[in-house]
Amino acid sequence: MTAAALPAASTSTATATATDDFLGHPKGVYICFFTEMWERFSFYGMKALLLLYLTKYHLFGDKAGLDLLGAYGGLVYCIPVFGGLLADRWLGMRKAVVFGGVLLVLGHLGMAFEGHAAVRIDGAVVRDDAALGITYLSLALIIMGVGFLKPNISTIVGKLYPENDPRRDSGFSLFYAGINLGALFASLVCGFLGEAYGWKYGFGAAGIGMVIGLVMFLWGQKYLQGHAEPSDLPALRQRVLGIRREWLIYAVAVLGVIPVAALMWAAANGAFALGGEISLALMLMIVVLGGVLVWFAWFTGTRCTPVQRQQMIALMALIFMALVFFTLYEQTYGSWVTFTDRLLTKDLVPSLVIQGGTPLPWSIASLLLAPLGFVVAARLSERSPGSSAPRTLFIAIVAAMLVMLIRDCLVIPQTAGSLTYLGGLFLVVLAPLFAILWAWLDRRRMDPSKPVKSSIGLVFAALSFVPLALAAQHVGATGQMASVWWLVLAYLILEIGEMCLSPVGLSAVTQLAAPRVVSLMMGTWFLATAFSETLAALFGKLAAIEVPEGQTMDIASAAASYEHLFWLLMWIGLGCAAVALICSPLLKRMMHGVK
Image (tube, rainbow, N blue to C red; front, side):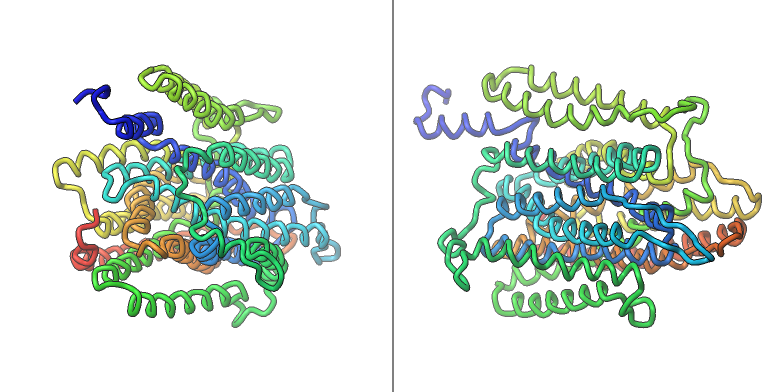
């Protein structure tokens, strides 16, 4: 039957579907892609600098710096439990994302205030307490902002696909590429600017990035197909304590920034820590976890059908696998950064590096080209649905970005902070390959189940520590810095594991969670990441190097500490992977046909 013979309603639907898709996926996915790209640019740009900023500028020791990094990273992924719950019940995902974006903008711009560098006077470290106070407050704003934005932007992606749409996993792989494109450019831009030009420039660039991300999301509202709106507008407008519920939620969240900032201060100063290790932030996360587990037992026991109950339990098992994986992964911003800073060379091809001066990364232009190119391509595809121009334009922009990226990787002098771009680089390269791989295996009915994919991810995460352990052995034996290519190999192995586990897990949340608690379960996924951040910091402290004033670091001793940590984490990862693989057949049955 031709389009002319279709009823008017069918023709309208077909046209809407045609104009809503771009390169095989809903345009709303690309809006989420670029919003998350800029959010991750700001988040990872700041994170790439945070530990180095604390230890080099404010002269914190490794342990204090890791404590703050762990508490910050943990709470960033803990608060999404509440953001997901509030979006499910009242706010809707769109309002939650916009509110979170505003808080993120304020927080990242606040990080640009660096104050005076710490100095040592008569053996004591004197720091700029006012500047540090602004830092703690800024971190708290970021934590609260991520709590509202992170679980809901991921949930929107899942809602843009019909149930059991075969494009879902590849769509999440695409979305995950946006996350890691942001992480890639964050390290190259913010990581480099922070150490080469000044910390405030690195942090400031992260804040500007979040502004652009928020603008992008607001521009693309029409492509979300109404999936992100509040489910019960009258309840949202209802007055509670004389205030509309919506504004009460915003007010409580803003007031909540103050105690979170106090937790940041406590973590940095070792205040109120049980046994010197269990910080107030970790105690809060334990309380939240306990509450989530009690709720989970109640909800699955009283509000779910038998099939939903088993699917929710299978989902919780996948979330636990993610916890283990990211405990290993988050070493990339802790022990891997300090190890690189102290014991590895930095430049991939030293003969190509620009000598003298401080060149600007061309990737700054790439960050603007990508979303601008999509906006133009999307408009062209709406005006001429059958035209190849939008695809050609988008591919040309991607090619230009690739040229600029290669230039920055090879000719910009690298630092320990900027080299964290390797994770994002490999993920962006691997994402389309894995999307093709899963689709190819699915057509041949050979696609591994989600539990098996997650188990494979754990194996690769564990093996990523082998190159670094060997590098540490080399340093200990020779007393010379090891090659940065050991780090490159470690990142490649790690990111193969991440492509097996993380986008698949995000997709599983949207498929296995009971419909009315999808955002809350997405928050639970990030709660697992919260614990992984804190656990990663605790493990990283096993290799913390504290150099007394007036002395130099003992290279052999430092290398031995790092080597011990890396072998330990490898064995932990392999053990957990074995358990996960054994449980995979049972978990697959409990998923009841969800692919």
